Length: 146
Image 1 (cartoon, rainbow, N blue to C red):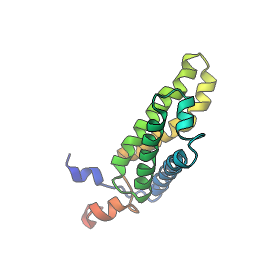
Image 2: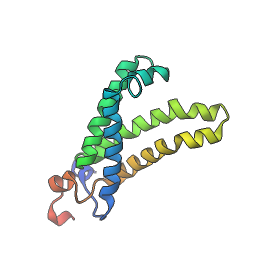
Image 3: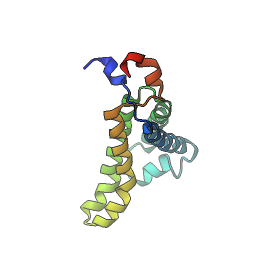
Image 4: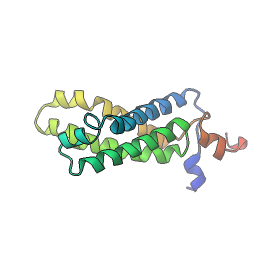
């Protein structure tokens, strides 16, 4: 595999919708960590028991904003999916798996549904790449590669 293969796009007509959903969700979540620090940022991370909640919340928020914007633009889309996948895996492991370990399957199933949706959506984007409406397509795909 060559580096240019990482920027290859697909030609699915409606794929951009998946990319926009993912970008929107993470852009909004990241911004909220900064503008609502007590309920969405360090305060929430402290309530969840994270060490260094201020650093952790803003570190995660930074990547959510950055990757959300990249996803919305369709720029370095596969690379942007990687931090999103990591964020979702950590979120599931630290905030949802404890419900399962406590034997409360249905609480776990309910609480993990959105995290799992975002994880699988980001994985889909990682595998598929961006779409014909993305900057990846405009910058890295020659007309004969469509």
